[in-house]
Image 1 (cartoon, rainbow, N blue to C red):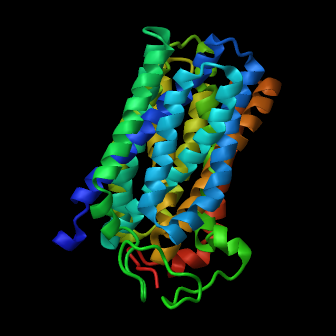
Image 2: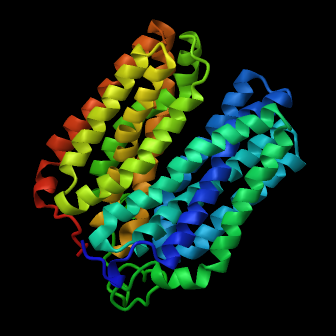
Image 3: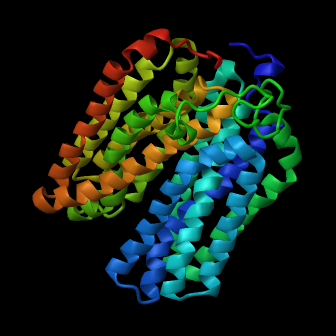
Amino acid sequence: MDASPKNEIFTRDFVVLATVNLALFFGFQMITVGMPVYVDQLGADAFTVGIITSIFTITATLVRVFAGAILDRFGRIGTLISGIAIMACMVISYAIFPIIGVIIGLRVIHGLGWGLGSTATSTIAADIIPKKRFAEGMGYFAMTNAVAGALAPALSIFLVQGPGSLYMLGISAAFTILALVLALADAKHLGKRSVPSTPGNAPGKPAPRPNGPGGQPAPASKLDTFFERRALLPATAMLLVNIAFGSITTFIALHAVAQGVPQITWYFVVYAITTVASRPIIGKIIDRRGYRGPSVFATLCTAATLALIGASNSLPMFCLAGALGGLGIGSAMGTFQAMAVATVPPWRRGVATSTYFVFFDLGIAIGSFAAGIIAGAVGYAAMFQIMAVFPILACLFFLVAGKERLANTRPNAEAD
């Protein structure tokens, strides 16, 4: 492994950006878990709670379609700061305007900020991570999501059930503002490293117009303006994995209660620990040997996770499922995200990242909806067994549809 300064992962910019991402995701995860409780306390019925949750996801997904083009055309740093600033204002506004109708409108704007901010952090990470250690670096970066996903929900539940929802909103706002302050403080330095040089384009500057003096090629079609074709293979595989993941995040707690296992938080703790421990290893394997092995391993482990959750009736079994989930779902997220952006030109990384996340979000939405229908018909245990089919389909799709690409893709290959 080349350990020269040029190939160093933990540079100042990387550490700052990872901290920004950690704070941003932490505040986001607190709101995601705490918001339903907050609006329920304000008098919202179950249908309204569902609307408030889903409208955010729908807005964020729609924004992601355009976020990549915005990032590549107008620059990374401005988009990042704008997205985080919108999110911070919305979290504060939830406390200032405790009115259900107003909160629904605020959730739309919040989804706009999340779609821009979260896409920007991953795109900038792809810009600054050295290509010879790209998958490893993306694995380290994505660990911040896992840490936030394990700790923030627990803190949010503690606050809304104890001191109160306003404390939850205050701490969520504090984390989001911290992300904004760090991004602003390092904006000038970080901007010099994001969006590497293209012909006629200085580092850190927005990409030139299609067919402009900088020589950036025009998109082949209008669709290519918003979607990156080279990201569709890993994005589709991730969609299939996330259909299964959506069923877990939505129904594992209800399944655990039905099985007489109330302490399901431990599943997420074990999941996070396994994810944090395994992602750097998986990244190194990808950089040395390619995507095929880690992708097969991740999708099959995810299928095993679903099957084990369906059969679980004790805390140790759920914890074992959490460990498999960290190896499976956690590895799949890191592997397919790295593949989505590794071989695209620098001026297409924003579009590639947004393509990946659009499919990522759609998978969770489809999985939550489908799992609810299936569980209503056959019960939670059987539903999880059925949902295990989707990561297996992801494995088969990846091996069949990606056969030629896998044969021609070299680890660490630079985009032409």
